[in-house]
Amino acid sequence: MKSALRYILPVTLLMVIFTSCSNKGPKEAALIPKTASAVIVLDPGAMQDKLTSGGISVDTLFSRIFKNDSSDTEDRKKLDDFRNNAGIDWKKQLFFSFSQKGDQKDGNTTIMNVMGGLSDAAKFESWLKAQKEFASKTITKEKNHSYFLTDDNTALSWTDKNVIVTIYKHIQMASDVPYDTVNMEFKIPEKKNVEADLKKEVGSYYSLEKDASMAGVSAFTNMFKDKADGYVFSSSNSSLGALSMLPLSLPKVEELMKDNYSTATLSFEAGKIVAKSATYTNPVVSNILKEYAGPTVNLSMIERYPSDKINGFMLASFNPEIFGGFLKQLEMEGLINGRLEKAGFTLQDLYKSLKGEIAVVVSDLGFSQLEPHQKTDEEDMTKKKPLGKMIFNAPVGDKASFTKMMDKVAELGYIRKEGATYKSGELMSMLGIYMLADEKNLVIASDSLTYAQYMSNKSQAVINTDVLNRFKGKSTVFYFDIANTIGGFMSSSSTSDYNRSMKTAKETFKDIIGSSDNFDGKSVKGVFEIRMQNEKQNSLVTLTSLLTDIAVDMRVASKKQKELEEKMFPGGIPAIIRTN
Image (tube, rainbow, N blue to C red):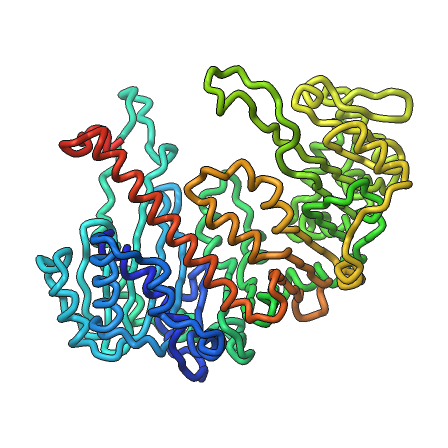
């Protein structure tokens, strides 16, 4: 099965780009359980024209990936066979869904499904039987579907319209093994019947009631109203099962966790990839977000950063009292306050100590000057030392509350107090962490010089004005300079198997910009953009060059590994090494 998936999954991801379909809403939602933690949907129709206008086709991509040696020819033949003769309907959407289940008794189970459309179910079955991996498998016909299981926790199931690949991974946790105190031994639990559970799991997809499937989740179905190239959905409901594994019973937790959904649309535009997100919270969480509405980001916290080589930064602004709002809902505030009183402070002191503004800036990442290295090989006589600068700044809120908190930390020996300031303790210093806090700011820096330059307020960071303007009025912002960061480490990868991919990535990507708004009464909206170096070409067309280079590098690295293994073990890798 693994061998077959090696061909099925890559061609599936490629074919999704080159076919067309109309977006009338996903009927496949009825086959996806509501308990799924995440669903990713790729719409090939929305991407068809973008690649065609860029002169890209499946054959063009395959010609870049596959060369003319015998192994490439064989692999290309198998991919073409799957593409043309497996009865797959390449005009329909692809759905990738993920679920987690588990408790203290049964352990943890992760389930991944890949669902596509079929144009000819009989042709699909014929193709399966023609594959060496599946020839010995028995196809079981159920009322609503057909299926067979493989030997590695994987199932293939299908109807006349859809096919689903289900990968079922179960892990029995060590903590789940009970200890018999009478006989002084661990009781090894009976081995879980994974095969039976997998059959039950697969069968459930074809008999879901609407309210038990994604078809009954309005947040999921409504996101398809916006035309896009892809869609992403996530839910908090899959986490509810994990509540039984908590050591304490917290009945109010379920009220906070259930029915919170996040959706996002993905679009490939000229010069950028744009993702627009929305988070929909349940009534309980929504009321808390309304009551403790937060401010917007303070851009001055990064504008004075002392560098013209900023790799990335993050700013967040919030009302610290919101943590108290959640604890009140959980009916835990009184219990926690009772325990904190012994330490001389309260939860309110925790909330008030910081203002609710956070800034993190990272710069100058890369390899610096050459330094001597103790090796006899002339080519390895020097190495480059990785360096970077960083600032974490959290302005102080209530001075009295902050002093209470920091004095307690100083008593425990983690930091030291000098007058009205607090500095790194011995452990933090050993770890290379420079911290200094006073009545205005709590700052953690990469080094004392960066701290001094930042706090002098005389420096001016080099940040694109357009980027800063887009961040005004937002509650959270994020920026990452992809090209310059890759460039800082590129020279160290000159002999790497993935040097081609690194070089293409630097020439492909420019930066990432992300931001989110405060709660508007219905949802929390956000925008995430990956900007390309080529601002005129459609980003999907630009991205294909990087993807094909990665594919080529992966194949080259795989061949090198195989050749190395054949040299070391001419008779094949010993079983004891392979299994370990």
